[in-house]
Image (cartoon, rainbow, N blue to C red; front, side):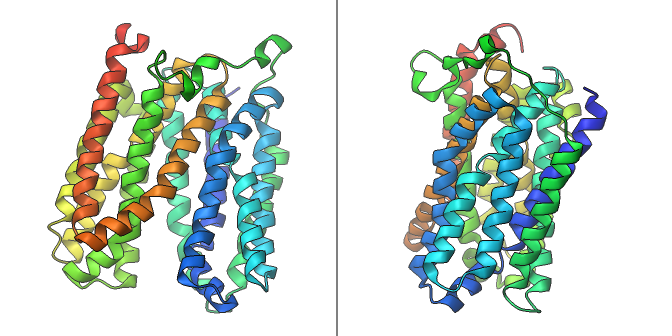
Length: 388
């Protein structure tokens, strides 16, 4: 399979998936409120999606190891499209929850299966480059999606959901007609490498990478949940300027993810992960000292650069550590990432209510824990014992 032809296709797929997903983000809170959701119910509506992803991502990863990547990706994107149309047609609160639950269950297939696809078609030398390209596509889609959603909200609150559903449906057709299957497992290969599962933590050092991703996701989602309040208090920033700041952070992150191939070949995944964690910790610390739009944009961009290189490098190392069951590996990784996104906003809100700088101070400490986990992994991993 020609890597130069396939990676741009995967980039476009994940970009369109995240554009569709991002379109509804600025609209959903107002839409749910119009139907009658309380702030607590809105929080549950957001959390239930991540909960479904946490539960079902490993299952879809394992299924893709058995039946192939393409059909599972199709199911995942179909689930997104279906959930968006269900949201557009919802007239009662339970219908919103049904749409989010169905969307969470089915779309949990997307990220782990696409990452497994990349692992299938790349050599170990090019693995981080492929993972970085997927990360960049995800980040860019997440930048443009909310902007599109905000524009079409001016028509009515239903329109962004119809557009998101249409974009996802077109993406699904693109996968059906353009994307080729990446694996063809024989019967003997259908038994996944059991050492990829996190319940082997006492025997298998790669489990530390799952927990590393959990702590990174935990700290990131805590920042996302509280930064708007923090920036308003510290620098008087409003929703419009915050949108620009997060766009700058996303672009910085996407740029460095797109450069993962060169960075990894020069420094290796281990060095990149450690540098990423250190830069993220620096970003958390600097956020405490924001004074205006410029400092907020610079400090969040620093954080985004550090945070952006971690997930692709972790994905690369995990798939290198397990020669079988790439889907299972990336499924567990997505599950741990979702778990961090479930707990992070709640923890961040609690810490913020205690002291407004506490979510970012805790981000520094969580980064230190992640760094120690990686160093422990590196000391026990056969990949690094071989000099990687």
